[in-house]
Image 1 (cartoon, one colour):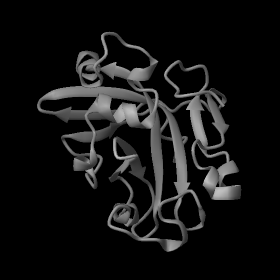
Image 2 (tube, rainbow, N blue to C red; image 1 turned 135 degrees about the vertical axis):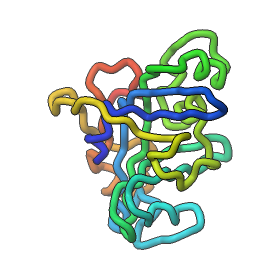
Image 3 (cartoon, rainbow, N blue to C red; image 1 turned 90 degrees about the vertical axis):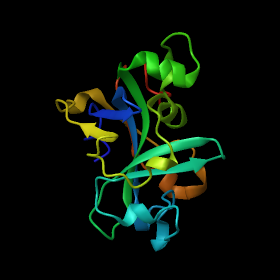
Image 4 (cartoon, one colour; image 1 turned 90 degrees about the horizontal axis):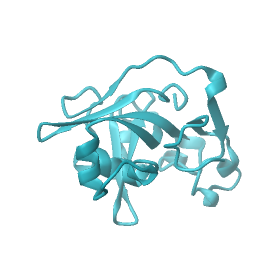
Length: 183
């Protein structure tokens, strides 16, 4: 699913302002058996409970007290898998994104990273649990990305997960300038 989301559009409409970003980087988190996942070993908390819902919901959580990270819940009811969206390429609503990020012009730091893309799109924990076909937050289809355009590498920032940290579950579009960082 993390690879299938590449190239799709992540869209928001808050306060009448439309923003759209093409997903260019993702990371997969595989529930029960993945030490890097918030649901490892069947853990259920108030924060991660939406991960156990049917796929197609927003899992948004706060990290370091300042960054809202957006995930797509991907499995069936009761199985807690999700895909973190790590970077987007701005497509529509650039002026709104720049204003939200306090930037004068489009540059990589606008939306190349999971904590900054949510700011650019206006996504916060207030959107936790929204179905991803809501009028405020949705995924839009796009042509499938050819496999040769996808780079697979290890996930970022999960060293605590031991062998699971070395799983090649981070995916990004080859040569895309909006990717947070290359392998």
